[in-house]
Length: 229
Image 1: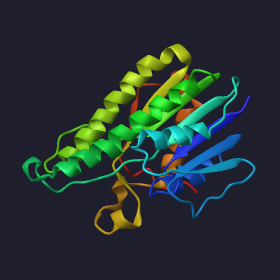
Image 2 (image 1 turned 90 degrees about the horizontal axis):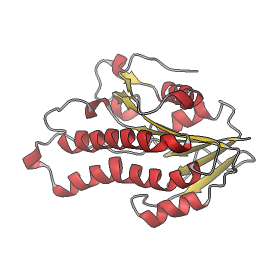
Image 3 (image 1 turned 60 degrees about the horizontal axis):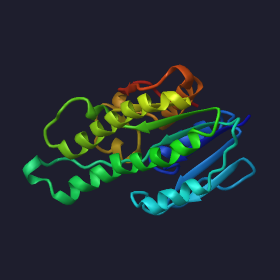
Image 4 (image 1 turned 90 degrees about the vertical axis):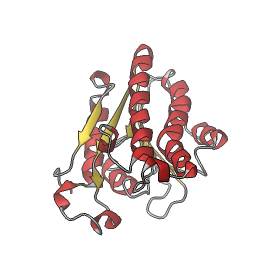
C-alpha cells in the first residue's frame, strides 16, 4: 500500500509554502501540478506535471492521465487553486471578472473532482481538500464575485462528501482569512490575521491523517495560528 499526494498549484503563493511542509510528511509519492516549476523538481518520489489553463477540460484530463494508482493505495489531493477580485459593487463589476472568479474558484474545482473520482473508486481510500475562504461565509460589500464563487465551492464540497461515502472518498475545504504573502503584507496592518502557508500545510496533513472520519467540513483558518518550522 502506498500513500500518494497530489498538489495543485504547488508553486503559488499558498502552494509553495504548503508544499514544502507536506514534502516532509512522509507520503510515498507526490504529484505536483503547476504552470511551471522553479522551486521543485522531479525526483524518485516526486513527479512534476506542467499544466496549462485548467479550466479547459482537456488540460485537466491530461493531468490526471499522468497520475497512476494501485488498488491498495490511499490517495490524497490538495488544491490551492483560486483567485481574488474585489473592490467593486455588483453594478460596477465587469462580467469578465464575474466569470473569471467562477472559473478559478468553482469550475476548476469541479473538474478536479470529476477526474479524481474515477481514481478514488479504484483505490482503498481517498480524500479531496479544496481551498475556499472565510469570505465565503458572510456577505460583504464590494466582493460579490469572489464570495459567491467560494460559497458555491463550499456547496460542491458538501455534495462531494455525500456522494463519496460509498467509495471511501472524503471531501473537505479549508477557509483561510488572509494568507501570509509579501503582497498581502503590503496592505495588512495587523499581521496577526495572516495565515502562514506552512501552517496551512500542517493543517492539510492533519486532515488527511484523519480522512476516514472527517468529511464535509469547512475548516475556518482565521489567522493567529503562526508559522510552522
